[in-house]
Length: 362
Length: 127
Image 1: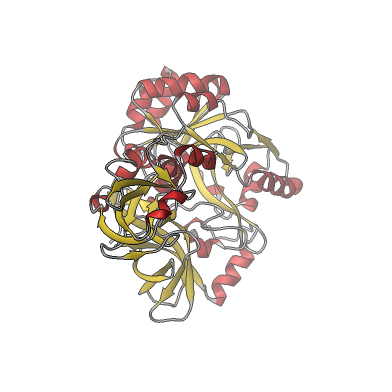
Image 2: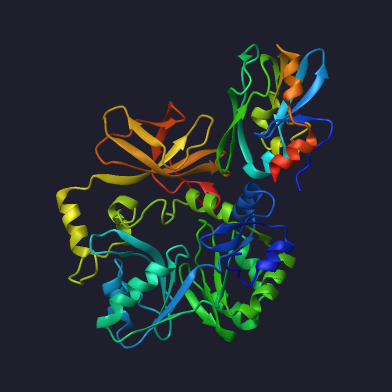
């Protein structure tokens, strides 16, 4: 038996198929992954993401610590609740994890991946030595993501007046505290509008049941993966890891390099850029039948260099296969994927593939 | 629990075989297989007229999760394929023993039928 979230029984009640996910017993789907995917694109769905790791950072050096720890700059969080996406890098510029940091009052809240929890906490602890800072994991918190064009409208019907007031005032990519130690962010991992709510475990099942009664459908981790891939969002461990720098993972936009702030991995990033980047992460679209899968090779007309698919799937919204691939910068765009021994031509596109329910690439 | 109809025959790689008489069999994938695969998005079938040999990989089912080979449970000639699966691959999830049959084979050697698994034997394979 793996770790279980406060909603484990509720998943069984909803006929979930449970799988092991980084040591947690989590719902992969509740019948049909594709229907769940479409529900989030068209209406509203709720994911249990309580397995994710929440760490609160406080103390007089909290800001300075995070400015040293992260490649993006928390100084950009000029008002309470603003959120920032960042990589946490090693000295070589490789990505230890990607995360979201919210500015709280006081301090900051950091949400990192579940599969990387132990090494993240060890690294954060190790780097904190020089700073006046407290790191406090919040393992008991439940975390629900309510996502889709009708997510906010439906959530508003079932939350307390205090929480509703917070939700109505949230701008995109902002998170704020509400009564009873709830924390509500207008963030997500689907490319749709929606919320991520962190709450004490005793509220989780009641909130879940009320959402379902309001017509929000339960969505498994299977659809979470196809939704994030359509949205062009990276998955740690697939699309980047400790050997891959943000330059090679379509995360250049998260690097705050313009001032003299020092952060872990900065020199390696500057050196890599100066030497010339060799690889980049691109989107691929397969216009014929079949499904691209991770680790398949990408081959080029104009070059003998190869690339590799990091994430591939069938896109329910586009009704064809899409993928992310790490490819040589100078190999041109005319390419094919080696699918089970056959070179199948594919089209290289700029991500994301889908935003707010619509195809967005050319 | 997966549905395993008693009147069909099976092979361990999760294909079912229905004896239609006159040396013809219909072949598809089992309920257990579709459940393991998850949502099916493409089915690639053999050509009508193709000569197939027992244990050959002759078709592919792609789900959101993975690509899986379909193996020939018998030797013979493909005489009909279910073209409807091209447009409605989700039928494999909805009706694996009905509308989502894959193809029909004219047997070269009817004795091969004796080596197929019964429902009880197949159920033991699924445990």
